[in-house]
Length: 141
Image (tube, rainbow, N blue to C red):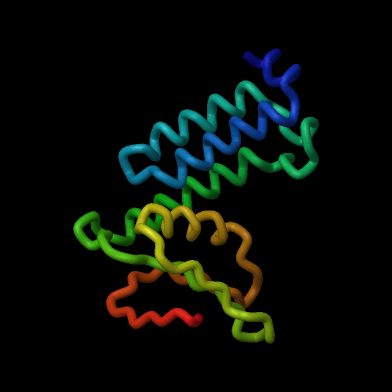
């Protein structure tokens, strides 16, 4: 299988990473151990992803971080409290850059985005994973 990925190059490895990302995004506690095993298998098959693309030099460490931080979010919210709409909010109050908000998410989607953005937080930045309890919405046009 290692030879397949060496011959398949960029596009085949990109498909593998996309599949891992989709699995991680959809996984709750039940799928996280399988996710760890899949990343370990990927690491075994493609030992130097940076040789395929420099942007993938640390991809396995990134996935380890995503798994860790998603597990952190899953452990913080009881299963019976996960229904409804969730959102991610990110900001650095010491800059004049805008606040980033990702609304309209399920809990497992929001937990994935929490994990994805959590690993790269800079000094003074924060990330919030929060449940929407009341909502008023209007659309223009």
